[in-house]
Length: 477
Image (tube, rainbow, N blue to C red; front, top):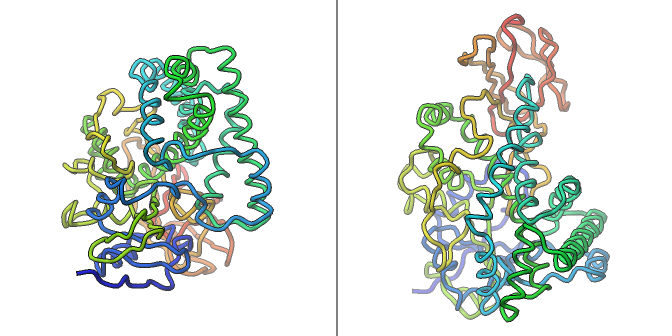
């Protein structure tokens, strides 16, 4: 029986607390019903695994045309900027048949094991160098020092972008996602639109140079393929593919690394499992993508009148598939779906990479599972994710500050006897002072930094996720 869709008011996917921890709200909504309408965004939000998987597999009913469209309206001034030179058309994740098939086939034709294996030594060396650069530091921001630069270098190296352009490309990628999934002011929209156009023109010029003089990289492989199969892919298609891959290969991977490390460090017993049993690392990657995936939502448009879980969806309606809810759905992953378990048997069934009729079950390369730079034996301390430059569909750890009122200390020793880890649970509203157990701990009301008077340490406050780690030398305490 078809029912009327319930309307959910007062729920904002872009609201900071929703970005920090969406799961309590999503779990409640999933229990109340399979679909609800969000008038603030004019989207029907789908919460259950079975329904979302059905949408992803049904190309006849659901279009991907809005998958990369801005979630919030773009102001006229930013639209004018984009109209100058931004010529992107639906190509990969936002394309429908018949275009989707040839584009996907072209990418798979050049994304060969030979191409990927040839890149591995370069990636491994780059990762090792990143780790060596901060290995001796007492505190490091893992996102900035590793998770952000590593996947960008990998994606750009695969495509063949010059290494000297990496920082510029990373900055363009960082701002680009906000125009699609964020809530920017008009001034910010215009500035970001200029970055989008700049990156598009960069890719056009880069592909033009590869057409004139192919080398040994994936973009050149696409050029060669266009000569062999001009009916399948042309130069304009290659520009669209390279532009899409430069974005997709970087931002979500950065978020996945940060989210995964944070999940492991909040559950030290799971970290220790990987130290003791490194063969679990490939499955742990799948569990990270399920439990703390980098993509919270993905979108579709109803081509025809449809029905989801008994709820009528009119043709033309915009649908937001909530991957974060689906991957915590106990109907699919059991009663412990909200737990993080690196040995979960069905972790690979997550929807972080969506699902389509082409997608096989996850295939693991044992060497890739260990991954360049993956060292569970290292002592790493997490900075809590807080709302920052993130959008409704993206989630990742960021540096930042939130109020503090309560401090509980629990000490733990790592294998290295030179370090003592202080673990503080921080939450509530600002207060002027508290004790860290063996010294005075002071928090200025409204300030970004907490001060440990005994060690004169400055500690970034991050309260919403409740866990905050820092290291102190034994000589100090």
